[in-house]
Length: 323
Image (tube, rainbow, N blue to C red; front, side, top):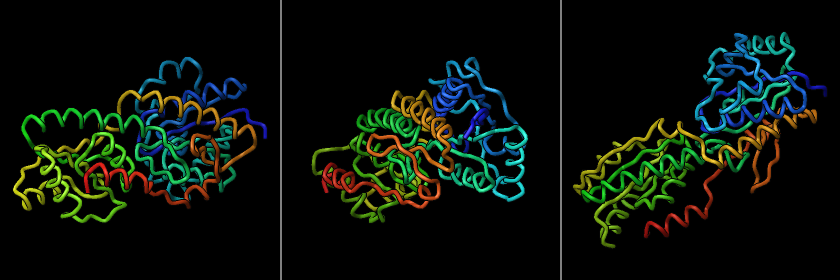
């Protein structure tokens, strides 16, 4: 397949490292003599024709920037057949030989829709939730995790000084990968994730009691947003054992900031591979990592898989929290 002109977009929630992926796509395309256009505001930009030609100057010094220079949005119009046909018309009118879409599962479903109309698409996983089932790693997860860890470490200082309990809510949508990772890293008293049904007495109260028996007078409870509301957990703790927890919802602070080296390097490798896949004549693919190796899978196959928290992480957490 001859590839002369491609588009790149970011869609859904922003993730640190998206800019590094965009930069890699552009530089790899230019290396092969391919024109590259940035589609602004995700699939909305394809519908409206909001594109900008990208060259080395436009993508210089963005590898260390959080967010996305192409902006991002969730497009309700693109969910309709009419909206999809408008996006396809833009691709054909501008002579785009392929679209590289950077984002999460919603972004992948959008790319799959374009593929059904004959548009060549390659997807790059980028979400702090790290919940893309077909890949071990998604761009943005490492930065988000380290941001949450730094914040909780700071909270722990004041919790220890005042001998208090802190309930911290981290992002992750309906997945607990971020909360589990952060909880292990900060030595949390308890970690609540949506993948595990909550037994409040066993999973929270008994863990606090066990920590007290072990001589601790401060307690850190990490809650995944898809598992429970931090305020509700705090209220139940106060009602059960008359402890007055402080609630912190980290929120969107986890999605911003300078991307870590790991996110920058993974994004760069994935961006490079995405262009190479288009040059090889492949379409409807997701760039993936599999135990350190970079590979690709069909979008339909990738979206059909289910990702689960590793049993080892559950066992390690059980041992670290003393129950």
